[in-house]
Length: 486
Image 1: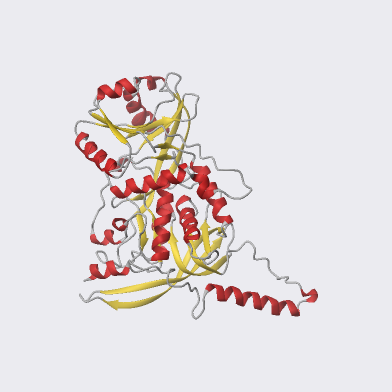
Image 2: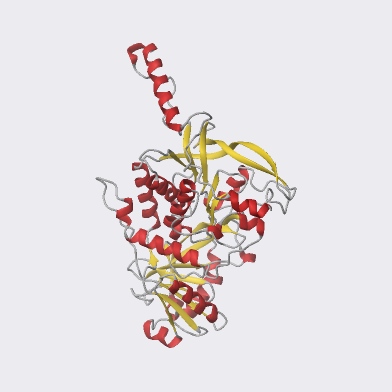
């Protein structure tokens, strides 16, 4: 009975039925009241000017219909679609809170910027197909009057995934699903592979899949800045601060099976200002958790997972930071301009970087090799021991390469099934998730943002059905298996 109740609880469009961040009045009522209060105070002040004793221009507003925690591409995409899909211009007030205003530790800017349709799940394929169309027509979506057009430097060179004899059948099935969803992908034999890419060593390769259209890489920082520019032009407020507390009300209820659950609704978000002890309480109707690698901590702050193990109340958001290294190297005799992003059987990957025989790549560590996520220091021995041998075996020219630089970034790693978490929490009823994509959040952000906005405004998915990505699956133990996680 609890599971049936869960499915009923997730079909809510909280903003679609009228916004209210205060009891007994809408947000628009409150804005009007502030205007009247200011006018009254004006009449008592010398000179009649509104001259507050304390400058609050750096603080977020005291009220916002939607508070989005996390100002990376996922959070900004949700903000964009909320404003684009609102029924009346200016009807929804949106606040985005980002604690790292330099984005120096944000996953977006530290990503390799790849986009592909070569997934095994129809939902992931659909998300990436929508997103690549968004990226191709970026200025139809994100153009701002009197500002220069956006250039994402999209390079449509495709992805080339390699499979051993053991993985060939899975690859064949994956490509079948990809084609059914409309992706342009072909299968290649080792002989075809050598003919098209003579620089590759096909030893151990039984089959390859190659993206013919809509795959490649782009500049993630340009997308981030383009989204920021656009949402601010639409009236979204971006605040540099950290969410430190949620104030919520609770209702206790008992299911027909006798299990007691507590429904919570967040009424207020406390935002601590950057480099300050000062904080601002913000009343709100909806909270979007798009905090990436730290979204698990934000969920815990809202009381999610604080219950008995095995209960819905005790089910945590299983998203944590995982550190990934990206290395940049030079190789004068390396693959030419036609080279796609290559994902090897071993898990190592690489792609070209610019035009000067430079390349970047890396490899996800095993569970036992996971590095400490407490800092973004790079382990150069990891390249020498775990990445380079596989690269040199697959591309003999890489025997003679020279590492030029390296960096580390974070995955918002979903430890349950490495897939995204989208939609409302079943018990904290006005917190929505857009997180946990485990390395493919950047490329799917335009589609995920729209999906979350549709849920908030209409109460259901409209463009792409992402019901399998709801939070409930963690409690029910229903993994969504994706075979192509890089």
